[in-house]
Length: 469
Image (cartoon, rainbow, N blue to C red; front, top):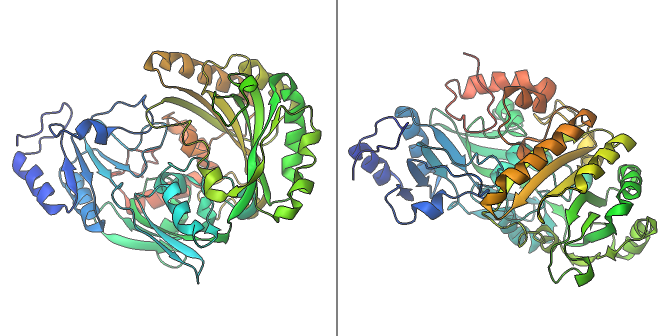
């Protein structure tokens, strides 16, 4: 084994690398290893970074060893759970990646209605474990998403209106800090750290396990309603009023999309640009027809594909469409109001969707998420009505510039109608001003917590909150 010679990496000797490998129960993957190319890949195929080494941690002791090694040798350090973040924040060039994907422990406690989840789990794995007990905790919209990244950024999902954000259901975290120490943070221990990790991203340490509150969610009534794109203005005007007043048992995110040529959709709709709402109703199944009756009275739906299904089926419905390795470019904002003028701008760019997978979504934030104070967690946009994301997506790297340009131009046109900041889980690396805008009045408090727990900014491969110098 030779010393690392990847450009930009501080000199680390072969002996030191060997010692790290010996200290790990998991594997240390180097560029010379045959599985390096597959292991270094993250969800967004647009990200092509080459870390000097990847520590595939098997347990907390491995995480402590890797954090200590990175700090001691002044290595750039990235933390990967599911690797889903659009900006590729689960990897880095010429540094050390702590890969948690082998840490898959899940334990459901049906008596306390809670679940403890290790940092390498995906939401599909959590749903599988909790569904056996007829329970779930709020998560996102694609089940291959990592638990860690989604949670630390906030956690918008199908259950937001009923049960709040993912962080509103987070009871505690176990976390390895920059100095290599291991602590539990909750409402009573390291309360300032617990406040910060609920929305502040991966700025404060490596979370090795999460403790979540569970809710009785088993069978839901869900699926898409689709309308022709020429009815989108009518549908959006109806939706902006309906979703804020609807029963909290009902959630539905709005999208502008191209219907994929999948057997779940009628052939006459394949590859048509349409607008739609994907629903999730957690109330009594016998009331579903009554709850959904207003939906079918809007315009002339081309498809009302709503039915009863296990909650994990809805959570995983888009996994096969948005597979790992696609090219992604994200732009995002929080939205307070959906004005007629904003709707017009949306429709201008809907007419120019560059590829089948490119899309725009509006995710509701109201209901239970609004009943948490804006200062109670680091997630400061409790008064917003939607989280909006514009995503340019395609499998072909040759289309990367096309989808990126569309997303940027779309965002530039619609940003004046936004609340100012954006949901950090849907941002690329956009600079310190955008990070500050994402946290609003909570930013300075986050800086204080960062300064206390990571004064040297070891954890900087993220939407970084810099400590005070």
